Amino acid sequence: MAPIAVNIKHAGKVYALNLDPDLPAKAFKEQVYQATGIPVDRMKVMVKTGVLKDDTPWQKINPKAGQTFMVIGAAGELPKPPEKPVVFLEDMDDTELAEAVLTEEQLAKPVGLRNLGNTCYMNATLQAMRAIPELQTALGVEKPTDDVPGAMPTDDAAPPVLAALPSALGKLYSNMQRTSDTVAPVMFLNLLREVNPQFAERDRAHSHGMNAIMGGGYAQQDADECLTTIVTALGSVPGQSSGANKKFVEQYMMGEMTRILKCNDADEAPSTSTENVLKITCNIDSTVNFMASGIQKSLSQAVVKRSPTLGRDANYTQESRMTRLPAYLFVHMARFSWRADINKYKCMDACFEAVPKKWDAGRAA
Image (cartoon, rainbow, N blue to C red; front, side, top):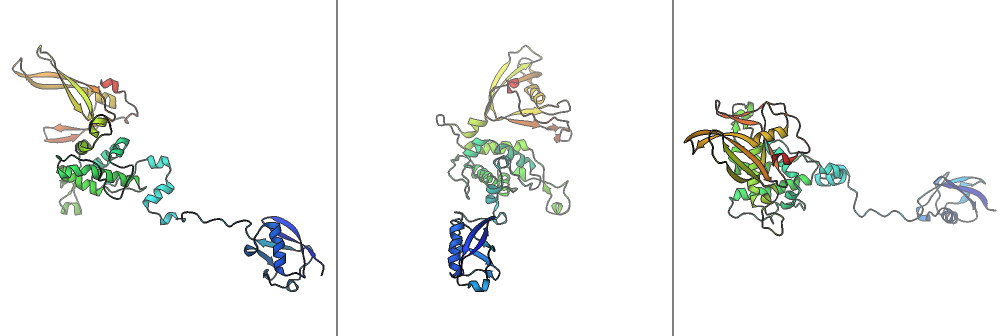
């Protein structure tokens, strides 16, 4: 029988071939391979009876001139499997999800800390300190491990619980870096309460339900006191200076303040003193609406003390100025003031503008 002119269609393209009914179907598949590049073992030629097999007789198919056969298959080599198996989002843990989904900008945003019962004071302090990249390095956070960083030198003279706080802080920051979800700082909070039992105080007066039965919920605390406790513990962490043997707090967080005390009631020579400081205070009251003005107010204070010249209490003015700024300066937003009439600290209610992105520290010098 004479060859028949037929067409094959593959991937949107049509090829003209000559089909010889006297030859087996496998010979026609070889022609298709020459035209399309699809290997015979991966090729499917669709005919009216289904898929053309190597031993299918042409009499059963009865091909006609001009007939078009559909060809299915991929030309060339099969794609290689990925080096790493595909893992779907629902099968990922928090660490893998953070690496796969979050962008660099999103990873730079702070991971949330769960409120464990009036612990906003601690959470705010931890988030503020986490913004110090040198602290992350000093605590071993750049290469997080499953264990508490153990290579960090500590002060042997420090109490064991206090010396353990930097390691717990390093582990907490490592956990925050490895996840996109909220972190519950339970271990760090328990250790913090051991270091400073004040943070374990309960408020029975404002507790209800189960909290009242259990002795009251945890009382609100001052973030400044929390900062002081943590920074004291960090005093054992070494700095990163190769030349000077400085601790981390001294190298990055400690500034110098000069104070001049002048008597208003007598002609006394002013006294000058210098001290190391970890923060500068912004006094907030009903007259202060900006951080800069609150800081300026704290730098000039009225003091009542005994005058050696007058032999009695006298009025003094203390002027304070920063003589050396640290790399990172904390601003204590002093919203609490001591009320002698009620024998406790009272929070000031004041309308205060947002903290500026930039502050001219030269105004405090």
